[in-house]
Image (cartoon, rainbow over all chains, first blue to last red; front, side):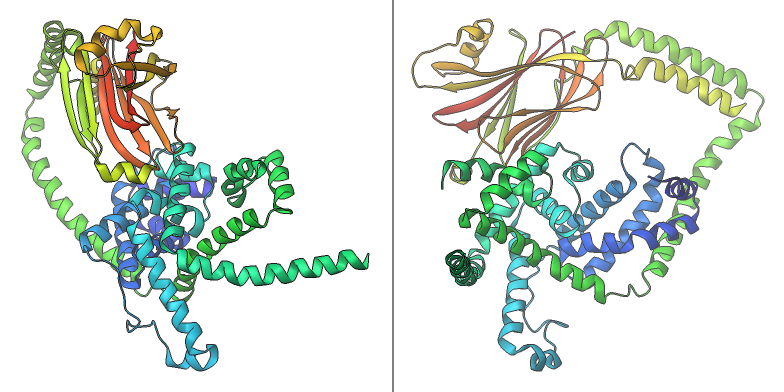
Length: 208
Length: 170
Length: 147
């Protein structure tokens, strides 16, 4: 944590709302990414962002600097998003008719089949993520969406690196199982291109 | 799957997450050149990551966070109004004591009494013998039973796994 | 003056209730035992626990899988890996007084908490945490400490 950020946090701990605004400006997109990764809906994610920064202002006095500030904030964002999702108590099964999901102007550019398949896949991913235990979903969001290192994830999740790796492994395994039809389709597509690649490599070998 | 696939599969995810040592990277990259199955496994992980990440990237890119900061400010104001009133009430309860000159010997007496009583409490209940061994317990997945014996001094926490749990672990 | 009195009072409280400094540690021993009804073997290294196990459970066979003595320091988590991948136990010392230690224990399978508990170990007390199935039997973690 650099001295500028330390100073910003100290001011916020003393009740300076300007300091909170600076923290908001720096981190709101990252908090939104985590919130959206969990709730997968715009309005809910914005509500979570709001709640996180209000909570942060109240509880930042408890931040002792033993961990990185951003992992502290990420943990707060993740827990708030998960609580929000539980309270909402709904499966985020959105149909293709939901607002913003199908723009007629895009169809002409990208082709209807591709758009539909993409939207269908997004829905499947949402459902598959919803089915994961909270800890595994959190691990996937931290790593694959937000790009935290194992060490950072261990700090944010309050567990060991071994547990982080375990959660990632089993989360990915479950997700792949849920999305196996799509994984298969992609693999078949790759199989054709791999075969072509091998043929090319073979031809090159012969030429040499 | 060959023996080297088995060895590489243990570190393939670490390689994918860029958390490998130099030696492990060398092992994996060497193996990947000759193993389409492991290359496929890596590709699947990349695809999964793309499917998770792209909608989020897209959502952040399109979002302009309208009025979010203003709502946060309002939320804080509302909270401060409530907590200000609560703290004022508690303050009013306490201040009369501090206005009177008797508070100095009163507080000193309380401190001494606390000092003596903690000594007595510790003497009467040494070693937390009466206190519970299991302070808290939670299990989202199993039924749990706790029982305690004093002779021998053993506490047992037993988790009952359901039959469906066994299938998922094989 | 008010602050001075408050600090004095807080000092008296804290001197009796606070955890000792970070240099304090406690020796904890965790034994991982496989209990089953296959055969009638009592692992010789479990002779000290034979009577306890026999009085508590009806298993015919007890085999020691791991014996992990460790020195725990406050707020540092130690992990004991299980035999199967994805199974582990995390132990953290969260409180230490003259003659008892508070341990936070988590039993984890595939990243999901099977059990999250906080126990108080005193001299001579053993906590047995059991139940997860392994092969033909079940795993029992025997946790004890030395003061």
